[in-house]
Image 1 (cartoon, helix red, strand yellow):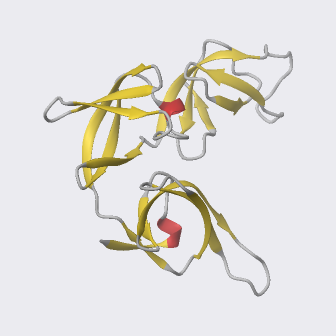
Image 2 (cartoon, one colour; image 1 turned 120 degrees about the vertical axis):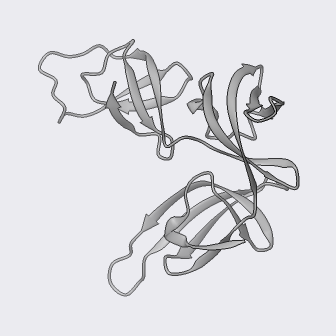
Length: 188
């Protein structure tokens, strides 16, 4: 297993903590002024038990990245609460539940390439691409005189993800969204 600095932890990473393997759900850098040092606030889920925990890890500390076997897969379709992926090498299909993909399924469109991580021949995590392009299905209409510097408005995408977008983005337009933070990047 490889040790990485706490600042290198990203959403979707699998790390070993307290002799268990955890999937990172959220992480952000917190800098405390004065005498306190900076740290990473990490929300993670135990892949075996399904329990969640929040940990503060000092930025200079190192954590073990879990040994996993990454496989390149393509998301094919959704069937109820299950998401079907196909292995690019042997064309085998894999079904993952909505609960397993917590916080990630809203970024999946058919034919999206992802990396599925396996530990002891069991799927334990999905690594999404850095960004995805989604179509806006519902948002408030554009107001006259709205500029890029004004406040943002909520917009619902084709996958159900709600993203805060600038006022000039309209229904039916395609936008690029960061899969780590869920933030709007640009209009396509």
